[in-house]
Structures are given as C-alpha cells and as structure tokens.
Length: 169
Image (tube, rainbow, N blue to C red; front, side):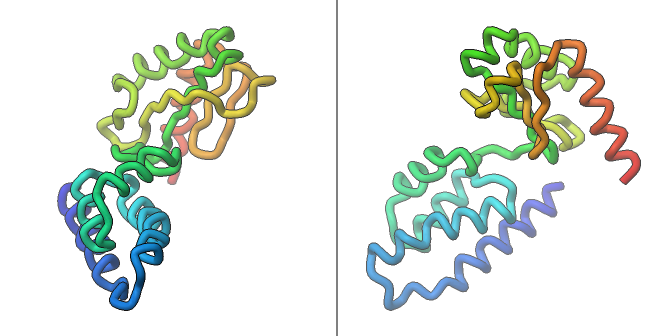
C-alpha cells in the first residue's frame, strides 16, 4: 500500500513539474489551482498537507490559499476515503428521523470513526449537513447511490451488499 502511495505521489510531482508557468501572471497561476487540485484528488484520492505545500510551491502562491480552497470545496478531501464513501446526512429532517442512530450503526458495524477508512479500504464514514433529499429522510449516500427512509437495521444489509459486490468483482 505504501509503495502505491509513493508511486502516486511521484505521478503528482511529475504532473506539477510538467506545468509551464514561466510566462504566467499571478492571477493566471492562481487560476490553475482548482484544476491542479482536481488532478491531485483524482490521482491520490485526497490532498494531504505535504501535497498542498508542493502545489503552493509550484504555483508560487501561499500554502494558506491552497489550504483555503481544499477545505472550502466539499469535493476535496484532506484525508483518504474508502472505495465506497458513506455520507450520512445530519440535516434537520434527517436528524429528526434518527440519522444519528444510523451513523452510530455504520460506525459500530464497520468499526471506524467518522472520517476514517476501514482496514480493507472499502468504506469511510462522512457526516454531512445536507444531501438535498429531505423528503427521503433519513438519507445516506454511498458513492453516487442514495438510500432514503433508512432504519438502523438497514445498515447491516447495505454493508453486506457492498461486501458481496467486492467478492464477485
């Protein structure tokens, strides 16, 4: 696993070194930031601090600006995510529908805390403020699939489905 990460970090560094910024103004360099961060996220799956510093150095912008963009946009993550990231909505409608119990059940069954990845790399749990599906509350999104009107006892079945899918692939 560590070898793969090192290989991906090398790929990121190669990409950053390939950027030709010699004739670019400060504004133009900053405009590359989101594009570069998307490439990094796509390659690594997240954007760790050391990579943020590397991006800042290459684009010749403050690392605080890179950090600000990474933490502002929900797409970017500073921590690794599982193959199947689980977003548990804790917005008002979902919370009233006992989403906190569903969150606790995911944590218990997967034996991880919020923002952590399971040992097998398959799952990570991410509480979110709103998934925009209040009529289906409580709602969970796994990858791109939305599960609505969940009950605590649905969690084990959902996890089993994803584990079976992995065994069959």
